[in-house]
Image (tube, rainbow, N blue to C red):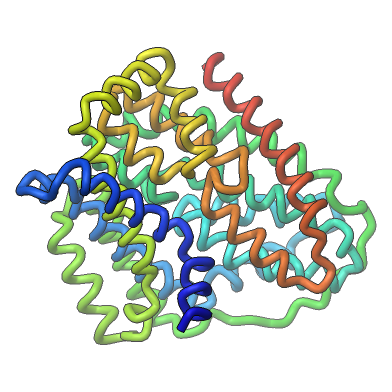
Length: 369
């Protein structure tokens, strides 16, 4: 029993911390009817539906198939390095940064071993992690904080993209330049197995469901209708996907909704956060993300500021920095540590240097742009 509890605490650390914080604030602000207004049901339904649809894409092998097609067309080490880094950059725009890393990190480690470049694993994985975190900021569905802020502030697509696309372009240029020297020019051509798309009919259905999710994000379709359609179709077609949903992430959001709602009703906390945000919403968002990660930072700070652009930029840029700044970064670390040649100390050192450099570049770009 104790061992199972220890495993749960280790696996769901963020949820446990969020739940503890929620309980503490509930003592300070006793539960009442106002608690109902804390919960953003639209965001929770969108998150749940998107997770289910993306799991369907994974189950059909769509991402692995795409990676193999691109790698077969890659000639030389320079191009291969760029492709490996940009795969999670572009895929995270549609399937979130954590799914992109779960898909491509194990694939990358296997490929690097095959071509005799295992020594390049750390820089490649670090840049893939940065790429997934930065690529995901380009769309409302790329990461949970974007989805939340897009809904919380009632943003239009024009407002959202005008804020994030310039930073995405700067990120793309920097990542491309950084990935060029990752691998030697001359490399043995890897033997890549022939792989076809599995279950193309199901893939077509998941594509339609994903379009429904996008229509809901852009407020064309009501979230209730979308949720019923997505869950009903997947329950009939592939019910195991519903059992595999990341309920912990949804529960974490609920806990942080309670925390931010209660803090907003505490005069001392509200005045302190408002003072920081008035000085610089951007820097406050970046700094908060380094400590509690960018998703809860977005939920917490949104209750105290109307400066949506600076907050949106801050929590996305703030995904760089410490390993906990973006929870997706921990996925790479976990996957890498399972690899036989893993060197945790070196990985964290390279990760920190690259992330700090990236953070400074994007902060500078934000000020200039």
